[in-house]
Image 1: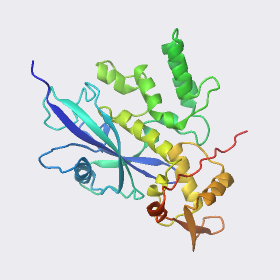
Image 2: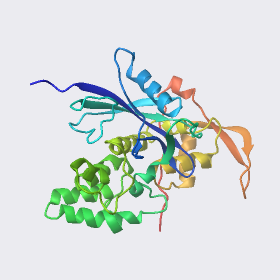
Image 3: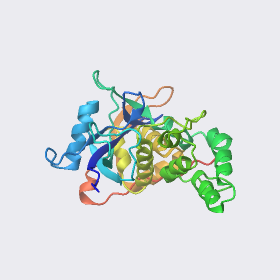
Image 4: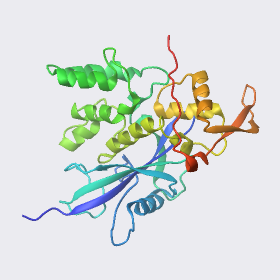
Length: 315
C-alpha cells in the first residue's frame, strides 16, 4: 500500500481592528467563498515556515506582515475536503496546515490586482459580539437547535451550556473555537453540510469559509482574546499615537464585550504600559483628548503584562 503524499500548507490569520470592528484579511476562491491567505511550504525554496508565510501573504494580498506568532497545526484527516487548499496538489494528498496569527495597525485598502479584502470577523461569527448585549441569534436560533441536538445526552447539554453561556452559565469569550466546533458537530454551520455532501442549511449561522479556515479563524480569535489579558499584544493593533478611548474600543472590539471605562483606565495606569505624549487630538463634540504611546522599550527589560479587561456593569 502506497502512503499518501504529505503536503505542508501555511495559513495566515491577519488581524486589524478599529473602534468598531475586528477585521481579518481574506482572499477569495474562484467560487467567491472567503479564505485565509494560504500557500504551500517548499523545503527546497523556503528556509523557514515564517519566511514562506510572509511570501505567500505578500503574493496573495500585497501586505507585509509585522507581528506574527505560530497558532496551531491543523492535521485532521480529510480536513481540506472537499476543496484542496494547495494548488496542483495530488488528489490523495494529506494536507497539514500550520496556522499563524499576524497583527497589524494598518488596515489600508487592498491594492488593485489583489483579490483580497478586509472582512469583519463577526460576519463569520455573529454570536461572538456582545458589546451591545447578548446577540439575539443565540437564544432565538442557536440555543433551541443545540437543545434539540443534545436531547438525551447530558454531556452534550453541558457542553452547549458552557460554550454559549446557557442556563445561567457565564459567557467566556476565549471559547470561540469550542463554540464553532460544537456548531459544526451539531450540523448547524454550512461547512458541516458541505463536507458531508449534504444540502446547505436554509438559515446559515455566519458566513462560511473555504476548507477549515473558519475553524482556524476561531482558534485565532480565542488565542488573541486570551493573550490580550497577559501580554501587551493589543498594542500591535494600535498606531504609534492613540487616545485611551481608542485603545479601549479596540480592546472591546477584539473581546466582543464592553469594558468599564474608569476601571479600565485605572488598571492601565497601574501597568505603566502607556504614557502621555502631551499632544492632543480633537474630538468631535467633546474636549480634545491626549494622545498616548505604548512604552515598547519595556519589552526589552521585562516580560510586560497585558491589559485589564473589567466588564461594564449592566442593569
